[in-house]
Image (cartoon, rainbow, N blue to C red; front, side, top):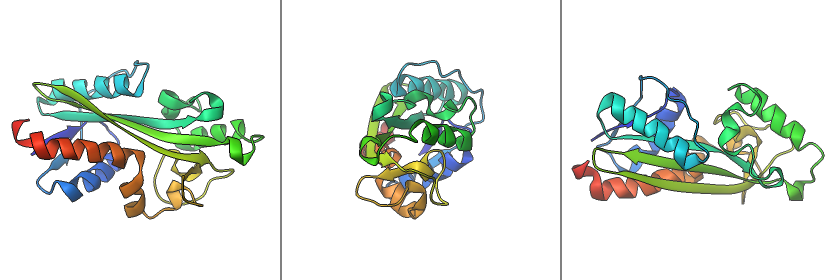
Length: 195
């Protein structure tokens, strides 16, 4: 079975392929080379659907997309859907530095945050979504060499290191994206032949 992942981010295609491939050995996750749609939704779900619909329209293959970000409680859930451009550009380093600067005077017990990932799957017959939430808090400084985005500043609940300091296999098993992908994999295991 082939599914198109509606992203131009090769790192994400690799990570998602590894996670889904572990439970669905016959699945091939393809990257997307079509036009990038404008993500003008007001929620993770709306943005995920915009991307998945565009990929399905472009390829004709079942397509899925995720929209994810970090939601910081003391910032009212921001950066949220604006996580990728929080620093004014799509530069992960600038985004992390801005977030750390905004929280510089906030005590550790008030730095609660969650990584949120919503996946939308679009096929010829249906649209369905899955959401994973990974609670934790924002670190005082960057740490770790793995991962991408906000991984170097997010400490998952139950850990003393950031997501970027976790081995990729550990992160891939526990993350917000892993949770949403597990739901997607369960759905595909049942409905896959009908896609």
